[in-house]
Amino acid sequence: MKNKFPIHLSGWLIMTFAAALPVSVAYGQLTPAEAKAIAEEAYIYGYPLVTMDFTRRVMTNTARPEGTHAPMGQFLRMRAYPDASFKDVTAPNADTLYSTAWLDLAAEPYVLSLPDLGDRYFLMPMLDGWTNVFQVPGTRTTGNKAQSYAITGPGWKGTLPPELKELKSPTDIVWILGRTYCTGTPEDYEACHAVMDKYQLVPLSSYRKPYTPPAGKVDPGIDEKTAVREQVNRLPIADYFQLLATLMKTNPPAAEDAPILARMAKIGLVPGKEFDASKLDPAVVKELASVPQAAFAKIMGHFKTAGTAEKGWVFTTKTGLYGTDYLQRALITAIGLGANRPQDAVYPTSEVDTSGQPYSGAYKYVLHFPKGQTPPATGFWSLTMYDGEYFFVDNRLNKYTVSPRDKLQYNDDGSLDIYIQNESPGKEKEANWLPAPKDKFILMMRLYWPQETAPSIINGTWQPPGVKRAE
Image 1 (cartoon, rainbow, N blue to C red):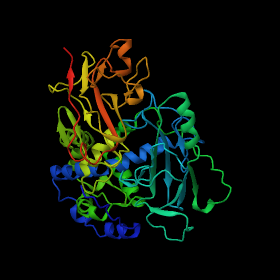
Image 2: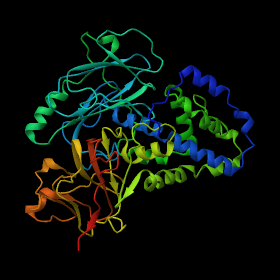
Image 3: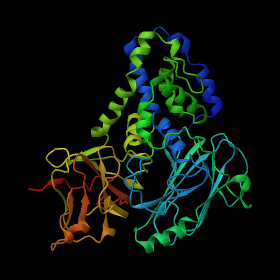
Image 4: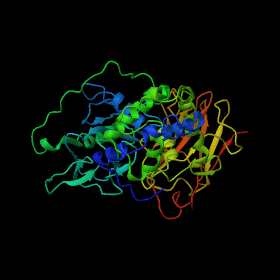
């Protein structure tokens, strides 16, 4: 992964480039197998952009902010941690309260104003349409004093008030996925809400003026019950490619994407142009029907090679900025949409115990940290339980995560044991209990603001211990 964020083409330049692609030359010259290979590559390439669009549709399909929804250009301030019914985003967290907002910068920039947060940890990552975190104001990067920004689109040019710092987005669509740490107690919920209520978003034309956000538009045709990932995976390939082509017009690919754009053009997939499957050979069209399933299998199959694999854990520092690593970008979209840059968070994930066996709620497990070897994080750490689809697991305690805020009970020698099982380990051990379902489950550890000097998960001087099945 490149550390430098890719320079994006302007909308005009990308259209000019697209117009020059030899689309017609390719028709009829590809074998079905060649076309399928290109289509799978294109599916993986576009998976983040299509998923972002579906996520935006669901989360903004409301007249006013309520529940887990808010209209475009308005903050959704979640007042409590999500529960097991939350299906809008895969791998949600139960450590921070979300303050999220979707912006469309096509018309004009938006101004984001943040208050003084005192000593409360927060971060305000901004994702472009391709899921790259192009900016991330927060405790680690900008400190906790009051601050204001103008978020501008790729084609915007103009003059800003001197007190506003410009944050230019590579795409018109932006997802602000703010997180504010909260212990979850009634008292801290109240204090955290008071801070979050001061997060403000207004169009640039309304900056320093009285502003009342307009009511959002509700589309009854949008499916809010089916998980976004399932909706995306169900799309027929022609519909998927047509949507991708449309989205690439206002969310231009990066300059370094030129090689894959040229290959995509061979099957008629060009930014801003209609994808017309009827121009393809019928044998090719038949072959492309299986692309969504095959491509998604490749995405999920990348899990075991996506990063470091040690003691049953897989983790990567390749999140937030992806360059041309399209498979990595698609995997993170599928299992952890909205992932931060590694300097802000690393997410070790585990599907198997130390013996290599998949987790099952039919057994009991223990995660043991020797004295002084709990996850090294400047912000905080936690361990979260997910079902096989990366959603929270329903349980009688409504407990989806274990972290130091649970007033963990340490052993006499200073070590720490986390009990991972379906049934309670006993009242005296419930602070250290992570409730599991009766069947398959997945574990995800979070290290927010991980240490960058030893011991550090970023430089490999610390790794999570394996989870052992209890005898």
